[in-house]
Image 1 (cartoon, rainbow, N blue to C red):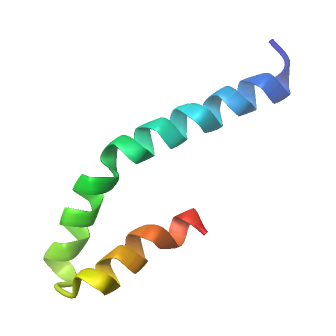
Image 2: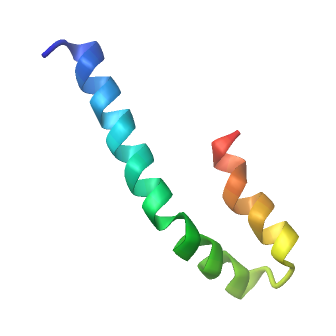
Length: 48
């Protein structure tokens, strides 16, 4: 396995896990930011 393949696998694994947790992360952020639109913006910011 080359370094590039390993980095790609790590990125895929991170993305898979992040997407699995995204809904829970949104609920967590909404505990502190009650406006749903603002909370979604905060959770989406790392995706940009």
